[in-house]
Amino acid sequence: MKHNRFLKVIVLLPAFWLLAGQSAGATPDLNNVTPNTYEKKEFKENTDYLHEKSLYENKKQIPEEQKDLTFTKKNLDPLKEVKEKLFDGGETTTNTITAKADQLQLFSDSKQESFFNAEDQAPAEQDNKLMILYSILLVIAIGVIMGFLIPRMAKQADN
View 1 (spheres, rainbow, N blue to C red):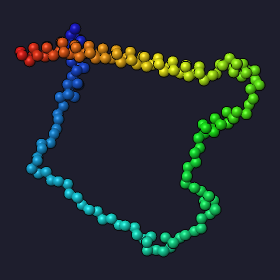
View 2 (view 1 turned 180 degrees about the vertical axis):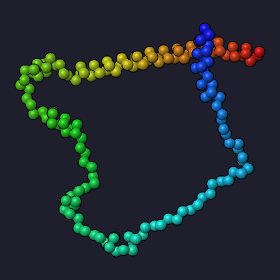
View 3 (view 1 turned 135 degrees about the vertical axis):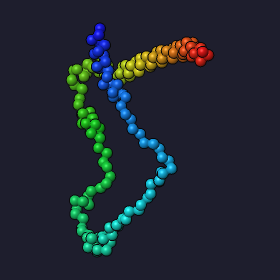
View 4 (view 1 turned 30 degrees about the horizontal axis):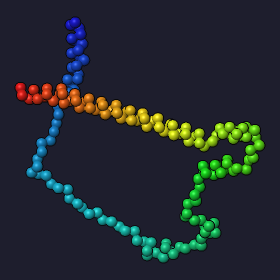
């Protein structure tokens, strides 16, 4: 027991030394405050190119390769190009698998749309349930604050 107390003192002593360290601060002397002054620096403009004709009259003919260049951006969509290559529509449906799929309407758009609609409705219902749960928890929290905490604080203020 005595060792535990001694061990606690040894462990906590450096913490107290760090907390009770000397702090230094400057005393505000508002009477001697001076504003910053603006000093304009000199700026040397480089106007040499205006005075020497060789620097601004150095004109060359534009090569033919550069004349063909334009600054308009081409609308290159790599996904669109891939889709066009994949789905050319040049294939015939002689394959028995594709014929069977068309016969059974396995890949029809109506079933896919209904599947996507069912997926969209489920999260909306979950969002509603979650919103109701949050509202109930908020009402309970406000009730606890009004019922317990405010009367206790009023009693402490009266004492």
